Image 1 (cartoon, one colour):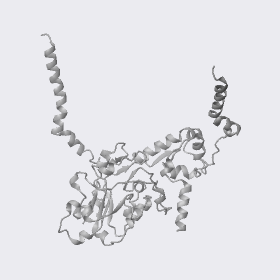
Image 2 (cartoon, rainbow over the protein chains, first blue to last red):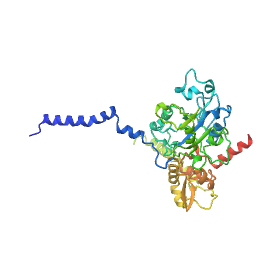
Image 3 (cartoon, rainbow over the protein chains, first blue to last red):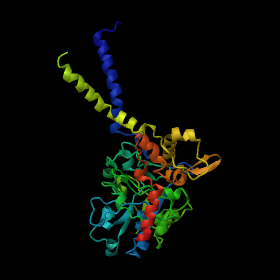
Image 4 (cartoon, rainbow over the protein chains, first blue to last red):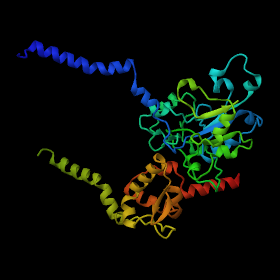
Length: 265
Length: 134
């Protein structure tokens, strides 16, 4: 049977339809592809998954204490533009009222005591970090131990990550931060680099401290022992014990980011 | 040629102005300038002088990627573990940025942005002394 033009066009058209159809079906009924991506971050055997547990009750017993924030901002040379300049503010760990930190938990009849409690917030080092997904240069990335890191060398200052982060954990350096850094150098601590104008910065779970076998500076600075840091993959770790013994909540878990900072209220 | 009386002197003046940097620097002896490097404090570097001179920027880039992206902090050099750090390793010996780094960088007109963020020993000293003042 000879292939005439009419028959050739029919076969070619059907083939093209078949090729184009497969991605459309995948789009409507995401099967294996999505399942694979959500399981992507399961830790390897023997792997680590750093996380933090914040005991808000213990924290609240020292209402005016700012030791963790001071220690963090000092050791990482986070610039201070003054309390009146919210526009340029750079922060790694700070306090929010309850209805900002946990908007999904807020209602008219929340206990007054909790409403008045300042909530300590920082980068949640999400398992499914939206900031990493949107970064066009991979300047922010997720390490195998779960820490969401910034590579300031690669940051081009597009601020997609600032927009993507649902926790407001990222700050942009609108101005040169150096003149606004509190210059108390602790000779005991290794010198942490400052940032330059035009990069985004955030909490790094003190990777520089962890590399030296130490705890993050906020955890060490807290006298109320309200902050606990540890490995979620280790069933004997302090964070796992605390989570097993207490009821804990996380910030905006419904967004699917899988935050790894837990709060005991 | 029309107007040769104007064009030729004009060309000579133009060439003189364009080549001004060349003959000015030659006559003032600046072309003989060779960067003089401050002597580092330590005994030995992480590699030979020739290799460091030609490839220190590649080493720094490699260190940067290993530390920041792979989370490795230490590397074995001459059988010893050294921290891969510009301010903690390199500049502990090469502690005079103006006398060492800047010498060649200025000579060649390159402007690396390392010290936009990383602290040089002089700045560390300054910052430590502000603590005493306040």
